[in-house]
Image: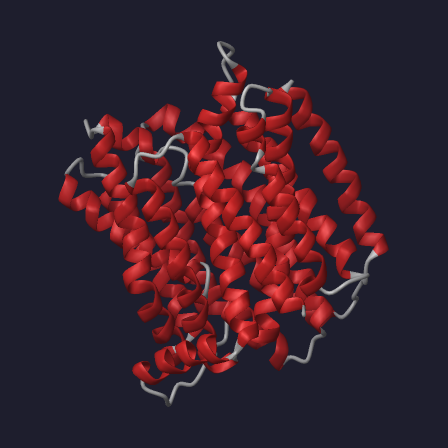
Length: 411
C-alpha cells in the first residue's frame, strides 16, 4: 500500500506541477529568472545541509552508546539553544547583514557536523547548541535577504509567492534526494559520513553566497538592543504581526511534534506488519510538493489571509485521525498525507504574509521572536512523558487555535 501510494502521489505531483506552470502567472523577465535562480540555488544547498543530517543523527548517537534519555537531552539542547540565542542572532542579521548571517549559518552548522566525529557527550552537546542557532538563521536570514532584494528590484508580490512556492517544492525534492544520498554514504562509510557530506555542501554554499549575493540590512545604524525592542513592540502593538506570529508558532510547533510521532502512530495502526519508513517519508515529501503547487492555484483566487483559515482547520482534522481511529491504517496514513499537503501550502503562504506584515528594519529579529513559542512547545512535549494520543490532542488544539488566530488576521 505504501509503495503504491508513493508512486500514485508522484504521478499526481508531476501532473499538477506542469498544470500550474501553464495555469498561473508566468514571467519571462530575465532579471527575475536570474534573481530567482540565484536565491534558489543557495537555499536548496542550505536545506540540503540540514536534511542530510536528519536521518542518521539518532543512529549515530546510539552507536556512541548514548542512552535514550541522553539522546532526548541532546535534542532538547538543540531546541533550547534556538530558543535562547535565536533572537540575538536575528538582531545581528538586521544590523550586520543578512548575507553575513547566512554565511554564519554555514560556519555554525559546519561546526556542528565536525562535532559528530566525537562520541563525547559534552562535545556533542556543543554541536547541538551550534545546530540550534544555525536552524534559527535558516528560518529567518535567508527569507529576510530574499524579501529585501525582491522588493528592491521592484518585482510584484505575486512573483514573491512564486519564489516561495518553488522554494517549498524544491525543499521537499531536496529532502528525498538527501535521504537517499545520506543512506548511500552511511552504508559505505558509517553513520558519520552524512555529516561530512553536509559539511561539504555547506562550504560550497558559502562560496556561492560570497560570489553571487549582495549584502542587505534591516537598520544597520540601530543598536542590537533597539532592534530587539522594536520587534517586540511591533508584536505587542500590531495585531496583524501578533496573529501572524501566533499562527506560525502553533502550526510549526504541531509540525515538529508530528515529525517525532508519525512513526509510532503508523506502527500502532499497522499492527504486526512492519512499515517502510523510506517510502513513507518520500510520500510525505511528495505530498508537501503537491501542497506547494496547490498554493499557486489558490493564490490566483484568494489572498493567503483568507484560504489559510481553512487549511489550518483541515490540518487539525488530519491530526485527529490517530485519536478517533488509532487502529485504522488507511485513515491515519491518509490524514498524515493531507497534513503534509497543508504543510506545502503553509510555507509559501506564511512567507508571503511575513513579507506583507513584518517590518523590514527588524525582519530577522521578528522572525526569530516568532520561533520562541514553537521551541517552548516542542521542549515541553519532549520533556514530559505524554502518551501518543495525548500528544496528538495537543497538536489538534494548537492547530484549531492557529485557525482562530488566522481568522483574526483575516478580519
